[in-house]
Length: 249
Length: 247
Image (cartoon, rainbow over all chains, first blue to last red; front, side, top):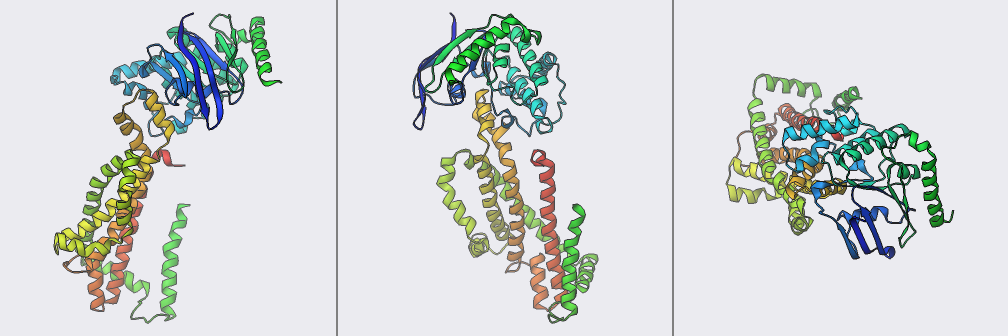
């Protein structure tokens, strides 16, 4: 297996709460991997350690050719990461401005992405004029505008109603098929995990271990129709069974 | 809700009028409001007060811009590092707590009995307020936005320019508004002392000494109006410029 992100014997505690003790995981290149696990099992902590926000207490990890310009992270509290003094367009353009891209290049990139998303933003307006769901889509576009090779997504769809949730999943797949980035996705929703991911990693309770990795052979793009397929339910049941074991439900 | 603001001035004039009609205070020391307003209109009409008004405004504006030019960059810089800010916090807080007018004699010694000493002391006090507020604005910026930019690979300069500066603006504006008000207070007070022949402060003292009581009240009223309008101007600018802070 081509391990693109590898974590070995990771250790991390917060005040006497041990989250990771000798935690290891490998993530394949160019795949969508979903992380599913109970509350407090360190899903967000793992992403934060990998992206350098949180320091580890021990162990090693590596992301191949890691580079901030080829990496995006969509936070759970996306609302607080948008800049209210910038217009919607300027918000999406921010990471490209950071990379010192020219105005034409930025415009081209944003238009390209907008086509993919089929979403009409009033670019001259400000994020605080958008609904929570629209803000989330804006945060998504901001993360994808740089065509990142590695993408971390933490609870991305929680603010969306079901319809927009399904739409955003469709757009994310379109984007994925076009650019095949390596995606790590945290979610609390089994349907979301199985819909999007090729591998679903189920975490145990603290101290966290990888309890099970469930393969999802369904081919992309996975439509709403795929959600009704027999195979979809089989995979979903497997994930649920693993989760049952973790939570004693 | 805007229309309710008119009640304030009407109430003030009413209370004032009742107090003087009932002769609660000697009429000589507190003329009725209409006499004072008439006097003010007369002073403005004849241009007698305009020279003083312009002198005072000039000094206030000048001291404010000096305070802004030094205070804003310094505040941004100090706020950029909590270690640096904490190291000089005492100096800022000490002088911020010292009444600026108490320092006026010191400024007179340094700058001489000229306009410079008035402007300098007002600029000094206003600058401390701007530094304090700007630095706090920077220090208390939301971490989530800075983090997001760091992850995008932003340099320190980019984070400062595109995030920290903007994050600090609401607090900075509060500083600017307090600074201009304080500037006016100090300028008017210092005008009452030696070395000036112009300004609203001078006019108030002169009218008092010569017992031109209506002129004194008219000038006090003028000073109040100037202060109020300056505050209003900054509030309007704030509303327009900090569009994202509106509810």
